[in-house]
Length: 112
Length: 114
Image 1: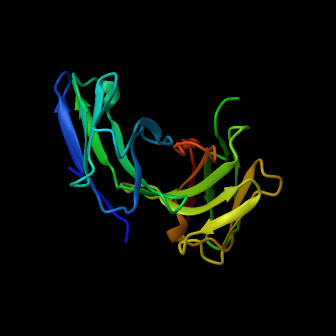
Image 2: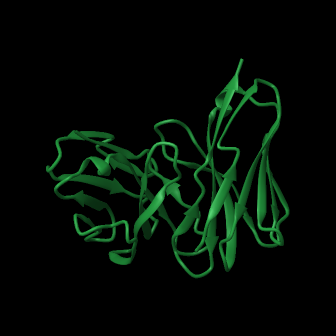
């Protein structure tokens, strides 16, 4: 069964600090992995998408890494801002099914 | 085009009533997805269309749920005889059939069943 596990479940950090969110997956055969940001009461918005051959990809203060051998990904947020407070969802696509496997998300709260 | 639109944004209904949600995808997107999301969880796949064809349905989509995309453009998700367990956010997303299949989500329709 395809699964995506995220940790931590929730995280509180002070504004300006860095943090790293983790994603482990068992989806096979792997096609791509993407990180979404979901503000409360809104739909998810794509941050990055990574394919099998990509190890690192950045989008502003967000840097995603992928280790396809260990089936792990991380999302690093640098110099956090209050607007980073949201849920961050790891989503993995396999090459067979059209649908995606979602993690439960990490709820990040950035405090002043 | 303003992205994926969902209507209504919020719906409160009594148990046993029927509800219908509408999704208008990005116009050039031929794939359309419905997901359900409960508090603190990631979205769960319900069903997916390519053009007007419904190609996949989750086992979560019980016989009380029906989705249509009659002309390959907008889609509706109907829930009959609602139950309290149906309370959730119903998310619609669309994408192109080619490429990396990056989904663009709507803001969701929140259902509360009393």
